[in-house]
Image: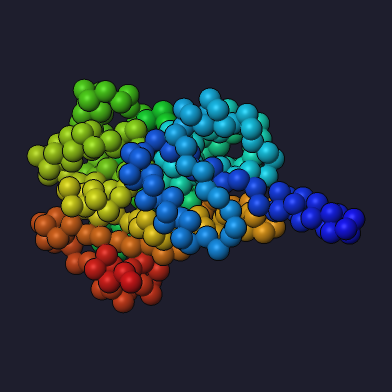
Length: 303
């Protein structure tokens, strides 16, 4: 009987040690949050419970109960910023966040943190742009305070592909944004966007794209929906691919307590705006060339 008692205690201790909690902190609609958690849970081959909770509720009630091994998945840049600036325990993996957004949130993070980036690496974007865009006027980089940008490093990367970058900070009210767009386009023919969730909100993004259309100038978009709305092209990964990478982060953490580094998904897709491609006389690379030369799949052939 004593032997069974000690074995039971050992198993309980081991279970507590191995299977820490995974909190999914978000500010999404409940329907969307439930769908996201369901899809994530479906991919996880672990005996672990996912706890979805809104950012304000997490900070008020759950953050104080965290253990060192607990993992917090933050959905979106606001959740990442709020969680990172308040925690003293646990580890954070951010998703649906740009690299420069994450760097800003990570700067204030007192716990280990990682991310699955939205968008695409700069090198990939510059390489593709070099092949199809021959106007060597500077590329305008418009950004808000919500990004942490290494201008020197980014400019050096751009120069390797024959481009120059002009950086311009803007406030986030509509008038300031439109003034900034007019200002940067005096020397540039294209806005080279970074993932900036605060700047490229729906209404602001629409206003920017409308202004670019009237001025006959273009944007390299941060996400694929921007192409349908009027951007020249965009490179990104879909939600399923992001979830696969996130699943791997969670699995590795729970199996070995190793937090994988922040990364872009390997599988990236590119979309071109057919009307703008035609208007600028651009011949887009074939699907085979995109795959072999840039490791990209076409949005029409991305299985």
